[in-house]
Amino acid sequence: MTKVVGVRFKKMGKVYYFDPQELELEEGLVVVETAGGIECGELVFTQKQIDDEKITSQLKKVIRQATPADEDRLREREGKKREALQICEEKI
Image (cartoon, rainbow, N blue to C red; front, top):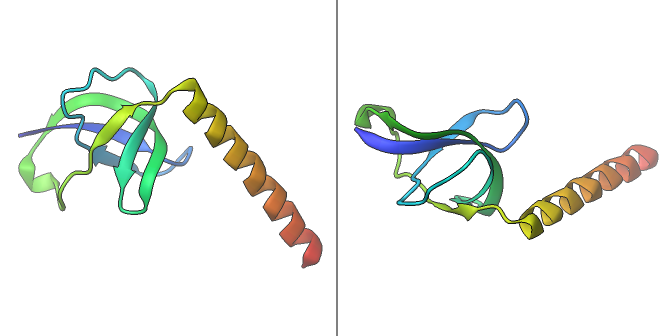
């Protein structure tokens, strides 16, 4: 059995397992290591034990609970995404 937490990156997206290490995590946003770099995601469930067979690759780690500065950067990026989408739609 392996201890994991569940993190989701999109509102209705897939839940991914991460290694919580020895961190005491609360619901909300967490900063995690992914194949694409450091990302911020929503903690869906905290510390659950799952069978080792259900883990298909090495678990990436939770770095820390998200800070207010992390949350501000995330909101800023979301705003830029919407602006970029609007510009693309206008050009099309």
